[in-house]
Image (cartoon, rainbow, N blue to C red; front, side):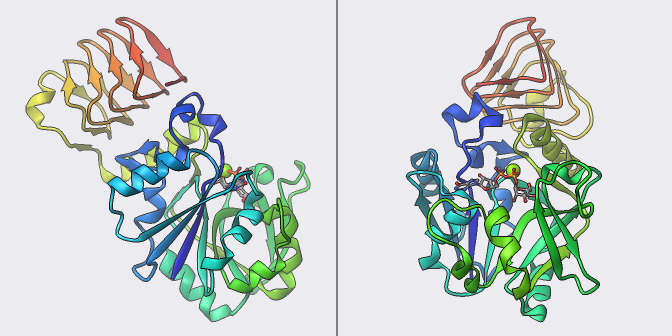
Length: 320
Ligand code: GDD
Ligand code: MG
């Protein structure tokens, strides 16, 4: 079975970090974001197709250097084709029931259960559904008593939403869906879903967590959920943390941490350096970053090349 990951976005909302690395490889709680989609795929998924249009070489290098246990096919779009065009563009690989994902979604969806539900219903597709208080920034669905989607609205105006159920960005489709996608730049949400409802597009609600991790705030929210779920880990020898005050759930791989205060919700990637007296909370500090003595960091993503001066105060910021 195949899985397609739509990863063609420019990651504009994670700039300037995404000027030097594509969003799928930004480290989230111990592994590149895209691994949070690839790793939980059911065993029968042997091939993962990544539809990209930005920094393909970077991703190619990542998958050459890291065996993820499945065949990876990277397909480049010279011009972004939209979510539907991207699907159509990889049609030649999709000859059977397949998974498709928005590349920025981090969630607790049970893919096996969803596949079982899809196979029972025999529709053209199944869409994972999540419930939110304010659905207008998402795709919104109405369903009938059998779970069949009867209306799909992409980003409806506030007050126009048919329900609180949103498109969670994880799907199972039959190849027949590809016949309903015209050539060129096409939005799956706006130009395809509304026209295939008669063929049976079903909703699959799930519980647990769901985050579209495409902004600094939502990325750090996803990090918090994942670190809390793992109970927090220290991956470096504890003696390296002598004098370090650790608060809450964190992932500490960093190789050089002077006595400081870390947490909650901090991921210090291996190779990050933290100076004496620094106070870091709710942040990602990537390999190669240097946090100066007495610096205070909160709500921030500190990229691999960043040097934070001694005593600096950084909050709610992305540094490259
Ligand atoms: N290959 C490729 N080409 N990928 C693309 C393109 C493209 O032209 N455009 C967008 N993508 C990828 C993005 O990288 C992202 O992983 C995914 O498709 C969805 O695009 P976003 O730009 O993140 O869309 P959104 O978050 O505003 O809305 C979508 O996701 C919501 C859930 O987070 C829609 O699918 C909504 O209906 C949904 O509720
Ligand atoms: Mg998104």
